[in-house]
Length: 518
Image (tube, rainbow, N blue to C red; front, side):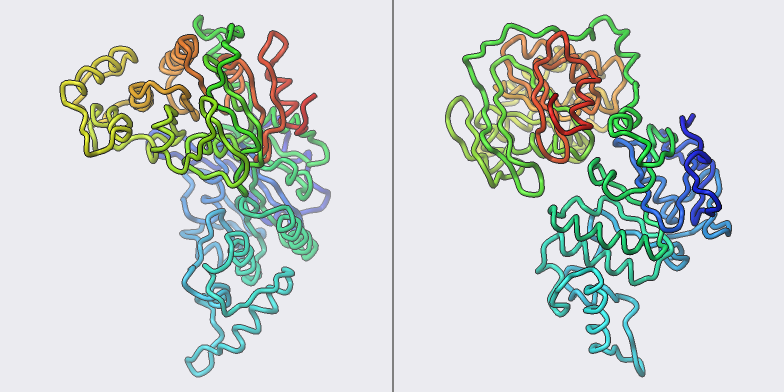
């Protein structure tokens, strides 16, 4: 149930250019949208907000014809519509620019802008006209580019602006910008916002999706918040403080865990403060995470809190060599190291459980045994295979220790439930006996019982001396497990809080919302 009615924020005598009512969308085993209402007014920038899995992308894809709604209606400019594909939506006046640039990198800038719409005379492309029009269009965006250059010779930021230029030239009634600032620096963001305001003044409705809170408040007029596929509310931006926005996006969804006896908030442990496992000094990567300092001690759980897109995963990947830092340095056990690859990190006793177990964690075609043994084999090198007897001993040990079910090492891992698949990934890294274990959303998408078991395991590992860097979108989970909490916002570490008896979710959310430690 939305906590703000749509009528509450409707300017007088304004007819929506887009009106979506009662939208349902279900995929096999997943309900993505339930009864969602959404509307977009001419000449406004409307931010669509929500955490991962909230339904933002699904709603956009229903609007643009990528998906067909199971129920509900869509009205565009006063006329009922139901698009059968993105091209139909585009022809009707809805242009979309996605975070991943969907252009042809081997073609020139001008060719990309007018691909499929080249000016012709007697069946031949009028190249001079095409290039002139491309220069004029880019001039409107304050871009001075060589339109004859191949697109892939420009940065991702420029490619994103070229995609926006193409969308604008389609003369849209509605412009959808899905994370358009993800690869832009501060100056490029300011430039984009000038363009957005100009389009807004021309009467174009802009649907803006971003995870950067400051940008929402800088450029948007209204905000719609989704959570778990449902409408939370629609608000005038000026009437919704940032802390209230964060609260509506995150919600209070973990009450069921609070009823699990083993999941009580963990008191700070007596740590071996003199033994530093990992220390980052000014470590950072341009476009991913701003330079930060972070020290992780033996037996310490350091939680990373922040909204999706705040830079939590990007920070963790620098500790594992999955991404290469371009500023600062990293020390492991007191020695400065350059982790250029994950294999180098594994050899330094660093382990990383990715948030995307399907794409980056598991090999679905392999068995439970083969998945568990992968990291140990990688550390040894493929020329030194782990003996089968040793494999059997280790795999059997961790199947029992983690209660992996079914307890059949020769079963294809794809046949296991999500919670048991997550345990297989954990087993893989525990076999390597890491000094630092990085867990990125280890309990996402698993049932309550498996979640509690994994949380209990994290406590046991840290009590045994393992250092843990723990990432979760669920604040209560971070607070339950961590000895200290690093707060991330807009790809920067903005606060480091000791998890004592006074720290609660409200205080963490205040730091997320304000960007400053109180």
